[in-house]
Structure formats: structure tokens, C-alpha cells
Amino acid sequence: MVEYEKHYSDSSFQGKIKKYGKKAGMKAVYSGLVLYYSLQNEKMPIKSRLAIIAALGYFIFAMDAVPDILIGMGYTDDITVLMGTLMLVSKYVDEEAKQKARNRVISLFGIKDTEAMDNVDKGLRLGDKSQAMP
Image 1: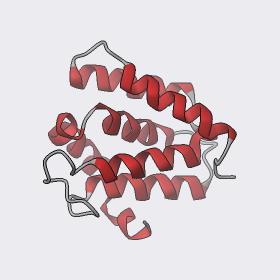
Image 2: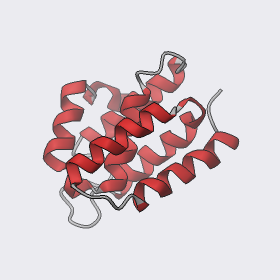
Image 3: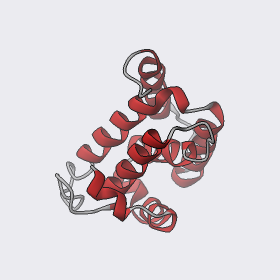
Image 4: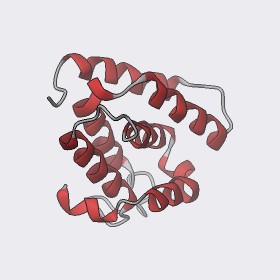
């Protein structure tokens, strides 16, 4: 995953969300945004920060394990990487990061149905108790 760090920048992540957010889907966008906003947490250890940057770089890079241009499958690997990283850093994900991500997803998708985001949050609670990074 380290090689994907070079693809991450604030502007490239924001551009990917704006241009491909709806195509990637709510779960991918919410997961990515929670990670993005979690980087602002000063208590986030450097190992966790590097894992987040690598995961966001993977999401940004279009030619990953399953190219993003493949309709119906292109973002499945991205979701797996984002969710896995969320589980690893879950004990450092705070409510502020989740709320900022929710607000951004609601404005991007123009929806009130939060089921996909609620499911991600349930996974975060489980990750916080099991396999989170030290």
C-alpha cells in the first residue's frame, strides 16, 4: 500500500470525490471522508496517518487492483481498502470526523437516508474493540 501514498493530496482527494463520488457510491465516499477528516485528529499516531494516506491514495489512483472504469465492480476494491483501514484506525476516529463526513455526503448525494453510513459506523464500533492499530 505504501506505493499509493504518492497519489494522495488534499486536492486530488477532493477532486475524486467531486468528480466520481456518486459513481463510487455512498459507502466508499463516506468511508473515505471519515478517514480524510480523521487525519485532522492530533491524537492520530503516525502509523495510522500513513495507513490512511495510503488508503486514500489507493482510492484516488484509478488503475488499482480493479480499475475504477469497470462498471459495477470498479470501486469494490476501493471500498474494501477504505473499510479495512477504518477498522485499523477505528479507535482514533472521533464523532467530529464522522459528523463532518455525514454532512458532506448528505450535501453531495442530496439524501436523508443514512443507512449506508450507519452500517459503516457499526463496523467502526466493532473495529474499535478488535483489530485497531496500537
